[in-house]
Image (cartoon, rainbow, N blue to C red; front, side):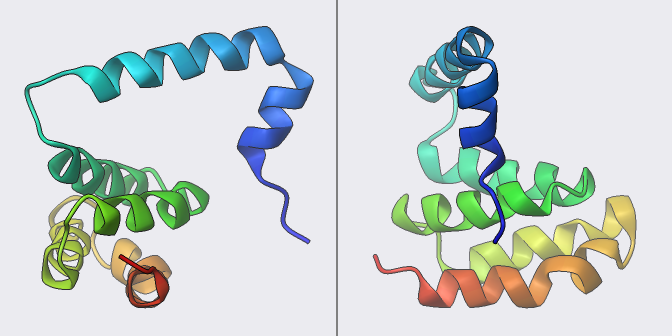
Length: 104
């Protein structure tokens, strides 16, 4: 059974996790980018940093923020210019499966 690393973080270091959550909430409230764009950027950053667990959370958030399947696909494809085939081989199939399984 795969543990949710954020839940472990919250349990083991609650004060630090709370401070981290406050940072996230401050970033969510910024107005420079809309929520959909932020989520697509998060997906791209998580691909290039090999944070495949986080991708599982950001793909549904992107879809719920209005991202189309084509936009998510293109986000993954853009990782080719930064990390070669790694993003494609490690997560393209999973990203599309997660997108397809996420309800609007």
